[in-house]
Every structure is written in structure tokens, then in C-alpha cells.
View (cartoon, rainbow, N blue to C red):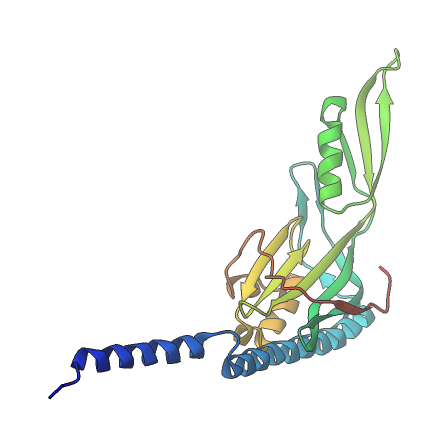
Length: 248
């Protein structure tokens, strides 16, 4: 009489369990494909909501031209204050993700203007460094050298065009299920990158963002961690139909 080794049953059960777990975790499983597609759709719908919400806000701001309480300091050389928010608009771009067409990003553009034309005067040895920093800050300017009686350049004067170009860009990571928010020249001459779980980008967060734009509150900056140099995961896709109705 032969008896079945109970270890064989254990081995089969373990193999079956591992097979079931592996198939359940496989990115190719139908269940996971469905859930991933649903998550991407949900993120896409959120971005469309953000686009529509910001587009309405941009129309109101362009009509109101509200004052902005921020002071933009360029080192110890210049301060731009008494700012006004002007010419705001929203654009977006779509992408192909497998069989889905999703938003690649949503971006808000606006200008801050100030009275007068700030002047920066530096020595000739510092001029190249200052010019580079001005370009990094996105500031337009005119420069003119000052020469001595022997026509040697002793100083350089920079006349700053009194406007600051500002952008706020929402970029989804459909693989990691996150949304990056990049703030360029919003409350300082700097690019800041924040990363949100989609559930945290609700209307209260967007309201805090507008208050940050106007210099009324910095609460938005505390809503998510700052992640310098963050970039969304980029699977292969085809970008389609860029849309921007205005040119800044």
C-alpha cells in the first residue's frame, strides 16, 4: 500500500499560491489593467477639473488686475514691489498612454508688472555674473557699459523691464500616481517643485494656490513636500493636440 507524501500536497499548494499571487500582481493581469486604467482616468478627470477651475479664475484675474503683495528680491541689488497681476491664461497638452488619451500637463501663465524700470549698476567684473542671474530669473533687460576717460569699461548698468513672467504647471505621473506642481517666479525669483497625491489637490488647495499668487497666504507651500528636480515617469506615448489660445 502506498501513501501520498503530505509534503507533495504542501508543495502543490505553495506552488498554486505563488502562481495565484504572481498572476494577481502581474501588470498584465486583466484586473490590474482595469484598475490602473481607472486610476489614470481619475487623474485625468482631476486635471481637467483643475484646468477648468483655473481658466475661470484666470478670466476674473485678467479683468480685475489685482495687486500682489509679494516683494521679489534680486539678491541685494534690486527689489520689485507694488506688483500687479496681468494677462493670465491657462493651456494644456494631451498625450497618448496606450489606448488612452490623457492630459500631459496643465499650465497657468501670468505676468506681474511694477511701476518704473529698476536699475542695477555693477562693476565690469561682476557684469557677466549678474547678466546670467537675470536670464535665469527670466527677467528682460537692457544693458549699457560705462567707460572712463580712457574708454575702459568700469561699470555696467542694467535697466530691467518691469515685468515678471510666472508659470504654474501641473504634471501627472500616471505610473507613480502623483501630480507635480512646479511654481516658477510665484513668490520669489525661483523655481519650486512640489509633489501631491491626487486626493490632496482639491478646491481648498487651489484656493490656497490663488492666495499664494496674490501674496495673501503661504499655506499652499505647506500642503505637500518640496522635491527639487522631480520629473514624472515617462512611458512611451504620443503627444497630441497641444492647446494654447494665447501667446504671452
